[in-house]
Length: 376
Image 1 (tube, rainbow, N blue to C red):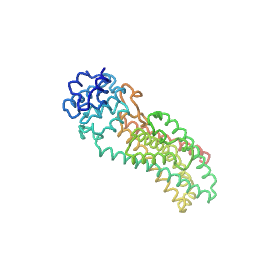
Image 2 (image 1 turned 180 degrees about the horizontal axis):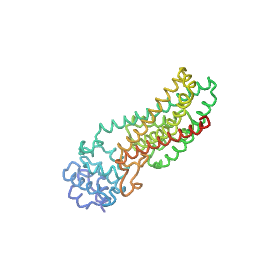
Image 3 (image 1 turned 180 degrees about the vertical axis):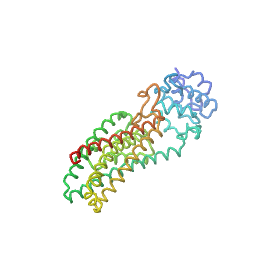
Image 4 (image 1 turned 120 degrees about the horizontal axis):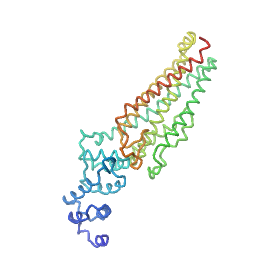
């Protein structure tokens, strides 16, 4: 009956605020009225009714479950298409913590956030969003450069040991590098299983970097694909914020794994072979320009990746809501009733990464000590 009634109306017969109020907040009916194109959006009372409907929708499901119901995302998308519909600071915060589908909704309708006070929530500002995208692209570039230069440094050192006939040194480093590479591939593969299925990326699902290039050693193909995919989506105007976010998270996780399995472990073995053995070996290493270049590149690249890795992880947790413990986008149906990831746990996460570093340092030192216990 309603459909027939609306179809019989002419374009000059607009739906008034009284008729909209008579819909009684029925979502299906309001959606049909809005999409009919007959709503008088220039009428202040109509805007007032739509605003009231919006405010009634953006509420927690219960006192325990402080999330907006995920089924409301399409209804809110319909309401946000009406000009002059605004949300408050609290509403925006509630939406961002109710699932990444709402984060995407807010990204698609920035005009609805014009009423958000920048002092209360700086992340709603356009300049912040632009800066965030540039920072993420820069971090991905640093990830690619750091991992590439680390491989170059190790290659230079292997060349030095090979020329000097130091079979044990370059054999051990190559074996350690191979073992670390296998370990990193396995961990990254496990991490990738914790992201949302490709269907959430829609038509752009094929743009998410494949995990298989990670199998190729030395060259950071996976991380380079993350950088190029991120840059490409930024140039396109961030049409798929979910894909853009998960690509960045994948690059950050890969760097964290690399900093643990490659940078720290190999740096300690290199330090041992160059400077922690006999005085003759140390003097020979210091006298060789090739060894000095390889050591400098390895040291700088390792220190850079070990610093950028936890900082990138902190950034992805701090600058984003509705993400899981690895930083991937988390949708409403996957969130716990308590809400999303607590940004207040950043310090604890940083401590966990530092403890992993310390554990590996002690493990490598113990291994070196046991290997040389006979000499003592």
